[in-house]
Length: 296
Image 1: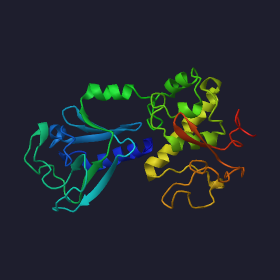
Image 2: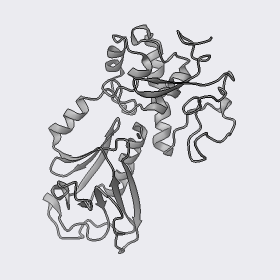
Image 3: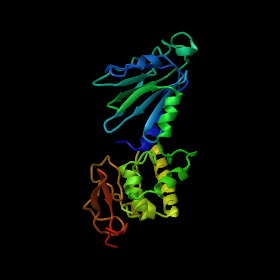
Image 4: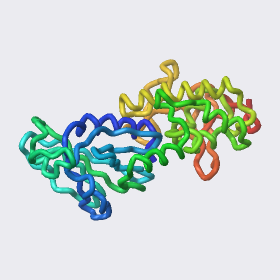
């Protein structure tokens, strides 16, 4: 499942692609029946909270997208005056910023093609999301209220997360993955931030020091910003980056412990461990992250 930096990067890109003009929204697959509600409206901006992406349109309507395990976007660049490529396969939603972009014109009126846009345009195709739905402002607020603070939100209040963590007996490795506590953190960032902090993932929240939580929050924010800017997760400090190939293929990120079970730890040389925690695979180094299950 994509982690929070991916959705924030998509929000930035989609704002760049579409903001300020009307777009055509359709559902080639036919399953996003509410696409007609926003088709032809002006695209104001895209935003993200945690693993949720929001396309905001004029008139207070928003398309809420959750990619889930299998969702992803394909992006096409369409030359000036050219037609968008025909959709291929099961496309849940297409957002088309090319061609006669003003056909629907939404509530702002105007004739077709009056957005004033020239040059190459973009088309994005959404496939396989868990959620793709039109919401009003109250519904969007309700979605965000259910989520914990997002380390990528400069206005987020980490105290909300800390209050819940310090009262919970669940292990910190599970609490970091709970989107109601902390929004946007997935399995990669969970494993890597705990390794970088030298924290036992099995330590209960009630035993976590506030100074450790603050270090986790700040480190997550710093690492995830890199992910937004580059499109890649990078968690290795320069002194530990030996330029080796990642385990799962050359296009995968190099990490400290994530998906490196059975391999030598980059720092201590001992074996990286694997275990299931609350139905998710956990990777950690028992020597660098000592605790009740550690060897250190």
